[in-house]
Image (cartoon, rainbow over all chains, first blue to last red; front, side):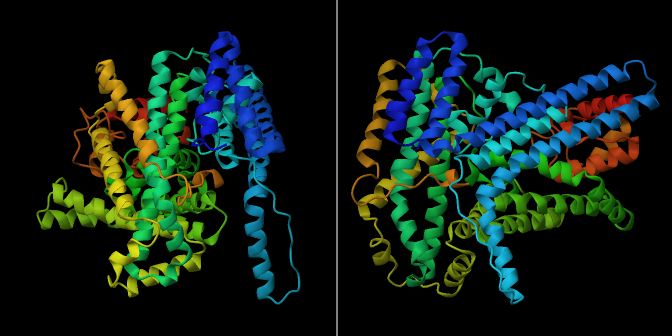
Length: 528
Length: 76
């Protein structure tokens, strides 16, 4: 049951809302939990047991860490500073063991379902290289839905309990709801326990206002997905499957269209997720902040899939860069060079770890690793050259805040992103490299106009796409200028409000790319 | 506090650290500059900054960073 399906929007969600509103406040969180497990079951059937085991494991680990912390506090009460430190270190080690065991337990599930096949292939290739007549075989299993998302949430919860950022939850049902909450289950955002726990368990009633507000956002998500993403899908599919038949400009247009499709599908899903949260008065964090207005790659990743970036920053980047091992290396560089070089090394090592994991998180394949290292290199090189670029701009008397310079940076960033997404979507790493080769060596516009009209899109489709993209672009500009369109709209009178509402519904019905001749985009991030 | 302001000015001289209250949120300090800052603070004040303390609230102004240093010095 996709978030974009009629079954979700017109059956599942309304039914949950009705039951949730009928039952007393105390039972409301249980309704959400039951709905979430039902939602999971409809997708993954009895793989449900795995999300339960994850919840149970982090629940037990959290309680155990809390118990150790309590014991420690009792013991250090009347001790002097030196003895306090000894006891603190001893108990910290105990907590760390629990943390590591629980994380390994959860990551093992993820590894089994997602990466075993990939690493088996690598191992077989290595054995082949040495002419060893051995081959490992495994049976491929379907992964539980959202395993990549809820595993990261489980780790963040435990790490936060370990670090004393949050108190361990004593109610197992509450933790089960946090990990399985149906709007965020399939494609995130990756929420943190302390930012959602109060609202998720508050059991606030669905009001007329929250219902309308939530469904407004859901409609905007549907518009992005059905009018834009689904329309571009055929074109993108043909280009990526049969790229060798096309010239450079068409292949590059395929990469641009795929990037737009991905953004519309993923951010559209986030609109539905956040809108569903709004209906239940639960604030779900934003996952996108106008990413195509970024002036460099680093900024792009702070605006695209924000919660994943923050997760990597908090649980990989800083812990790795400030680990004893990395500090030792960077101190050696500090002695020889300076603080900046040592920070570059520190950050570089951590960045490498982040992007290796980020690439792998997106999928078990060489093209995903390439995607990760591509961004690592762009950010790392950007960090190295930034001070020199600033100096050069000063010499050339170019103001960094100048509109045209900003525009130049935005276009440059977009071009780099299109290339990255080309590898991300390519059927394999070699396909991605071949596509790049075509773009760079076969750059002829001969027959361009004819070809673009023969790939599932006609003039009418291009006109609809142009207007739809313009609409999303204007909304993005307003958002970038911190103008809250929905708040302003809610202050208008009922006629204007409902006219906008109906206009959006009608535009989806009339201009949506569904029915014969169109193939809807599968939920892309659900596969991660 | 003066020592801290000197460190910050060396890292990014274009900010008024006596008044700025959005060093992280306003992207005056990016993650790499924060790493440099932490390394300098640890050397200068003889403390260890745990990763759990690296949150915008602790680094958004010179005053907040100073409060963090003082707190960690007391805890050590």
